[in-house]
Image 1 (tube, helix red, strand yellow):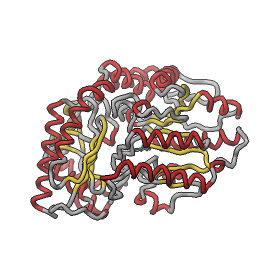
Image 2: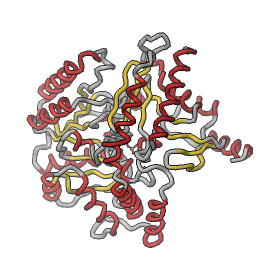
Image 3: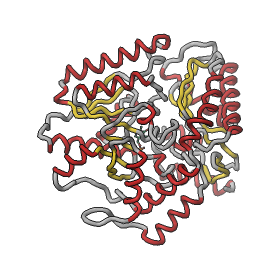
Length: 451
Ligand SMILES: Cc1ncc(COP(=O)(O)O)c(C=O)c1O
């Protein structure tokens, strides 16, 4: 992009473009970053021609990496043949049929039915509505409340933002709406219980059980859980805690919804994290990695048993214009074919995931690091103040250090006082080295130069 064009683009951006999740005053002062093109699978180029290694895979989504011609070709072929036709009423097209069958094979055992949409938000809003429908058909309409854990992110619709318990996202809109129950999330470091993680897990379960009892299990439809809470800070729980949470739901006749919008499609070394943790969910939602972000596509999967109830309800009065979109489904099929051919979940499980986690663990030796945690190609580093003090929540050290990392030509995400990582699953060993070398330099700069 030449200088005049860049200036013009920035002016138009300022005048007309509202950015999602952006503080606009700061944006207008600084000017936006414009990413222009693909350099290689894990590297993009910005407006200045700088090459940036993307340790965040866009927004945790470009799982197969940038520049995949096979996906572009599949999209071109489908658009040329039939760009769009709906699946409403009694018609459909070929790609969503094939995609639903493929997902039934990849998803946890009981989940054999997919209802498509375009985003993680829509997939979770769809789950919320299916739960209401199911309890109405079952004549248990009182079973309507939904449980979410602290630090969860489930989307930005009114229902899903009510399930999203991060205060920053809820407070400006006076959410949650009625009928949402918040229970503890597993974050021992944040609670100052790093040295008693097992005790903290016990506390989370006991407190969840207490709140279920207080509200009455007969008023609660489901619990939504990201197996690893990502936006909330990459909170990696022990398997025993998730197992206990799952069992608590079973014991109280509360359905378990696994939100795998980030953890799905190989991110943690299996097609779905539910299989890593043996969660056997009743519903599962997915988006992002289903197309590696090439086009918007998402799905809500239901168990056989729940689909029988939905069918008993007659007309399924739910759906979006772009549910079962043939072109986005074609992108998803091409994306999944790449993941299968290149055995990407296996690569994350056996090769690049362990390598990445080893390099991550070495970061813990720096005195500015309070904790590292992760699984597969998902990770976070907790930062301390220069000198080693625990930062207040407003310090936003992660945002600051992520900007230092960017100066080194690497993109990672700053979340509060954390750095978060989710590189494409095709990242090479050398790129992992480069990523952590940039992170080390940035942490050292933070440590030496203070604020
Ligand atoms: C776990 C989880 N669920 C749902 C969503 C919402 O997805 P979308 O932004 O596609 O609506 C996100 C987005 O980051 C997410 O991380």
